[in-house]
Every structure is written in structure tokens, then in C-alpha cells.
Image (cartoon, rainbow, N blue to C red; front, side):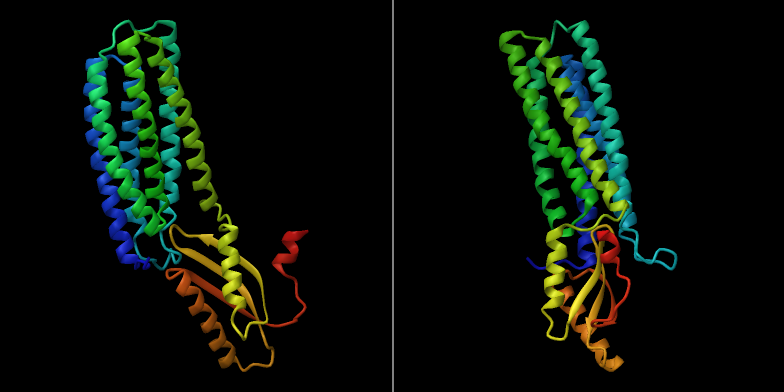
Amino acid sequence: MQSLTPQQANRLKKRAATGSVCLAITLTIIKTFGVIFTGSLSVLSSMIDSLADLFASSITYVAVRYSSKPASVKHRYGFGKAESLSALVQSAFVAGSGIFVMYDGITRFMSPEKEISADTGIFVMLLSLGLTFILISYQKYVARRTHSQAIEADSQHYAVDIITNISIILTLLVVKYFQIYWFDTLTAFLISAYLLFNAYRLAQKAIDMLMDKELDDDIREKIEKIVLSSEHTQGLHDLRTRDLGGVYMFEFHLELDGNLPLYKAHDYCDEVENNLLKEYPNAQIIIHQDPAGLPEKRLDTVLQK
């Protein structure tokens, strides 16, 4: 699949973020009516989750627009990490929503509801399920093409909605045909537990990027393979990688023949850089030239101690 230019990636991300906000508003309105006419705690939990999605999607929209700004004099690495901040705020809001639903679930276990309009609830959740599935399909496509953490985080919210919507539909069927009203409360409690787990995962990933965690081992191995495949390369050390928010940054020391003229060494570095850009077109690459075999204090050695 052909790589996107930064402009194309930004357009895709903005469309996905706009669609997310529009769907969140629609689902919140639909589920609010569902809560009023059903009295179901599981539908209420889903409505609160949609409110969380609306808040999160709004943050995502702002973050995507901000992160797509070009680098400036004072922000020379760009603004990509705004997406990580967005994901971190989203995780906090999702966790708060989960705690609220769990608290309400405990309360209803102590004083269970006796009447729930299951038919209305089932209709509301089926409609929500269809609309959510359409958005997720598009978000997955955008996240895959752009490597946007904010869009991926937003997509995970709606992926949870798919699971919760199906579970709520099954719950309402149990309530309708078997009159087991506490089952509705149990489902809401389980959904809130899943929300808390999902919030933890989102926060962990966002913190990893903000703390400049190294990229996955398979990416690092691919970088080393590309660099060492050059006929002029005699070694590679002190490789450091990080994600700037959908844009990778690589920094390493390239070992070359110490007797090379500076112009020739520069040409060989350009060759290595171009080979890397074929695999990672939007990457930012910093290469430090070292004479091969030069004894020096290396980061690789320090980190292994």
C-alpha cells in the first residue's frame, strides 16, 4: 500500500475525527431517549459511555488539528505528541465514567429496578450498533494508514461500544423473556469494569509515547538490517528511536572507513538515509558518522550495565 504524504494523512485524520464527533452526538441523543423510556441501567451505562466518547472525540478533533501543524522555531519536532496528551485525557474520562456506572450498579443491586422497557432498549441499541460499526471501520482504515494514536484511541472507545451494545441487547432479551431484572445491573457492572481496563491500556500507551519509549523490536531490527545492508557500512551503534506522534524518529552512529573524505562519508550517509526513507517515508533521521573501530564510550554499553 502506497504511503501517504503528511498532507493526505492529516486530511484523513481530520475526517475521521469529525465523523467521530458527529456520531458521538447522535448516539448520546439516541441513548438519552433510550434511558428515559426504558429505565435500564445497562442502557444508562452505554449512554454515559457515549458521553465519554463525545468528550473524547472532541479532544481528538482538537488534538488532530493541533498535531497536524507544521514544526515551528520553538517546536522543531512538530506537534505530534498532542495526540498522546489527547489519549491520556481520554483514558482519565473513560475511567471516571466506569467508576460512575460501577457505583450506580452497586446502588441498584441494593434497590433493584422492577420495570424495564426492553423493546425500546433493544431498538436503541441495534441502531447504535449499526452506526458505531460504520465509524469503526473507517477509523481502523485511517489509523492503519496514518499511524495516528489519537484516532486509534478513539477507535478503541467505539470498539468497546460494539461489545457493550451486543451485551446490552442480550441482557434486554433476558429481561424481556425471563424477567431477571438484576441481570441488567450485572451487565452494567461488567461494562464499567471493562471501561476501567480499557482506560488503563489507553493511558499506558499514551505515557509510553510521552516518555519516548523505544519503538517495537521488529522496527529496530528492520532499521539495523537496512543500515547494515549498505556496502559502505562497517557497523552501527547507539540506535535510538521514538514516535513523535505518527512520525518516527531514528538516531544512530554509522561506522564508516575512517580514511574517507568528508564529502564521500556524507554521500554514504545520504545513501543510508534514503534507504530508510523508502521504508519509513516520513521519518526524521539523524546520523552521526564514526570511524569504524574507534574506541569510545557508547550508549549501548552504558545501558547494558
